[in-house]
Image (tube, rainbow over all chains, first blue to last red; front, side):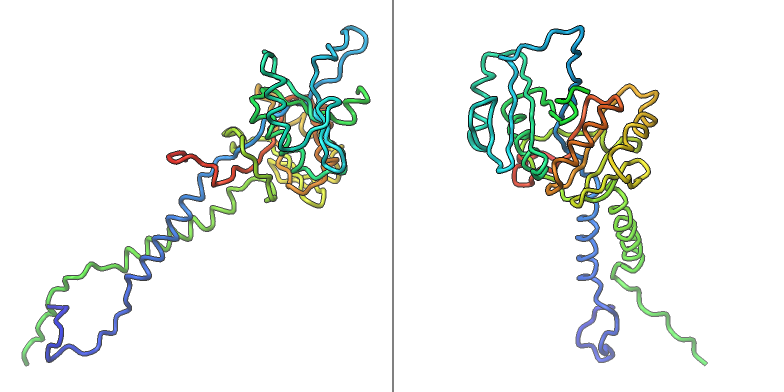
Length: 142
Length: 147
């Protein structure tokens, strides 16, 4: 028997004990295999075309919903003050009776991107289908 | 002279080849993993309601990365652009003969929004209307059984 214990001929074993090493290796292997197939996630947004001044009448101003985020992270829906927490419920309330769920987001250039992304995230959470990004050039009309 | 007796059969599994294979696999995965992240690695925004964007993982997906210090990178190719105003020309080239004109923006959470706005403006000039803002899904929000 190879594993004979206490036999007259068995000296100290000089093999490395492989079992803990294999354990660690297997765990590392599984970690890397799990990390690999992470699919990207994201929020869909639209870059709207500026309205054609000559041919099209301007869209109905009353029904357009614009989320404006100021430099101090305060938010407004059209002209109504709101904040991060109230934004979602308010949007749900506004769009409860509407079929076309479109919102425009306009952020101050000095903001961090994450503030705007969070607002878009909240809008998506409030079942808004289309989020348009308002940009300075769009407002200038070109 | 008497011949030496053969050693008795060993009852243990020989783990050495197994360890060899494992090590090789481990090294392969370790090498591949950082290569899989397309574009520049940025600190993405954590959002609650993102949708999966399988198309952004494709080899030829157009990704625009915006880093914290305001640099803009364009993938495929991982080109560093000196300014967002180079985008329309290059993106238009990449978009020719494509049906799906969705372009993806991977922006750092702390990047200035003006840079992102600039990128969006220039993408629109390139004829892109649908933009995917790549974000990160927080792990604690995962439902059980969801991969």
